[in-house]
Image (cartoon, rainbow, N blue to C red; front, side):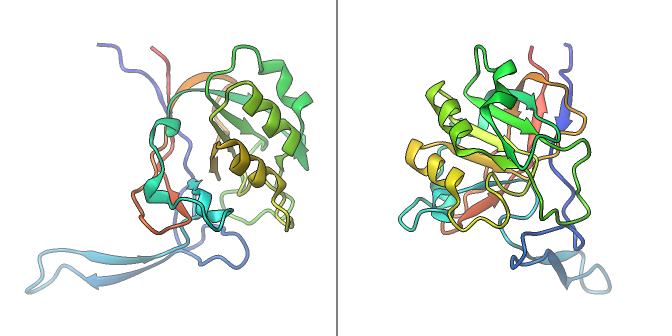
Length: 211
């Protein structure tokens, strides 16, 4: 049997992982450690659900939206296309995606960094232009992803692209690492946890070579 290649597109998660200003930084405490009378290590984690690679739930941008635990899993599993729009910020426009838009699968991930800043917060992160999200939705895309912390500019208060995905029923992945992934089609596997009241969920996002 031929093993299909995997690309891990999740950043490392630890105490120094960058988080959106105001979000809780990752913290780990040990509730139990191996020693006399204790056969196991057990830790307690404190983190924002937007830490690392994550799926925003509608509850994040819609007061009446569904929590992460209610998300259907189908959008997070299946054929996707990685499109390079490197250093095209501050907004990824449709013109930056159009070269790879023929025959789009239901999932699109956009690479904007030459090298993702997994060790620092980037206040000038690239985001999707709302019109580009509309155009992708028009073509039947169900999920969009990006290698930055948000599909909207970090300073935005309107969250225009989040509002497009709310209105069009799209799902989103953020904080991916696409540094080593060539432009092209893959199988995406990035399932959110069943967090029944959370506004987002961490995912272990991977791409698999198509058979």
